[in-house]
Length: 326
Image 1 (cartoon, rainbow, N blue to C red):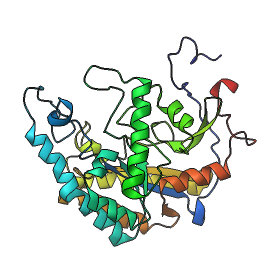
Image 2: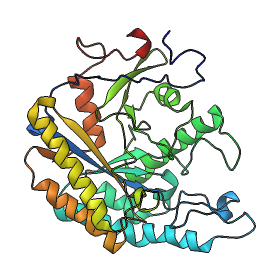
Image 3: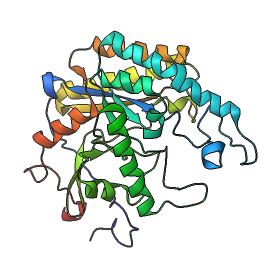
Image 4: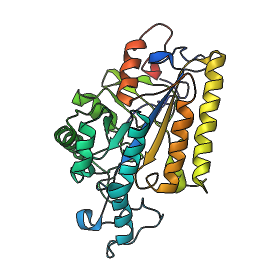
């Protein structure tokens, strides 16, 4: 037992080492050094609302929350902007530049926007599960979600997204923070290839869950338009573009000097980056990235499948899936 396991609570074990000073040296399919996975977080319609849940949500343009006695029409209509207008601005960008992305979508939000589901059916973007509702470790204000409640949430989302988009979701990411049961429930389901609830690496890696390997494809809260709302904030869309450009340049510099391939996740939201001024940052970054050699846009499912084939757990020279086995 290592120090991180002593007296540890339920849930995944912590690992402070990862690949260490010698990450795997490789190239992505098509000989790319940097794989960019653009994640469109589609939550509008799945968020908390007074009419559906008895409580208002907080993730609009403001950080405060009205009490349950007042319906927050400002936040509700801001969310509706994302589903009515913003998502289509992002969809047009994907079509214009011919790139594939990952839609991290709440099943309920998709149910409420049939035209988007039809659009997804006609294209090759993959859909990652983001809950049936836009849920986190709570089942409502001040109430912890039980294992059984989360299991139901996952099953509802799988069935719903299969109906609306035709896709059996293979990946999962919850609202900001997973519960201590999330990964085990995904492994138990048997239909999931990976989860993206971790933010701790720039490469996929295997963990041991329920006694067998399970793949993690890390996400990021840094290359993310949530920074329009969370300090340190972007004062201008140019700051978001500049942050993404500098990160890509640095990753390319490292990779070209022998460090090997890297994954760059970029997360955007239709209610935020679907605003016209903010959409310019994403447009400019897509154009910049497409102009760089050694860079490719990839779907998250393709990243997961590549990694599972190229670096299966237990391969010599790779860290074991279980940090306790080091």
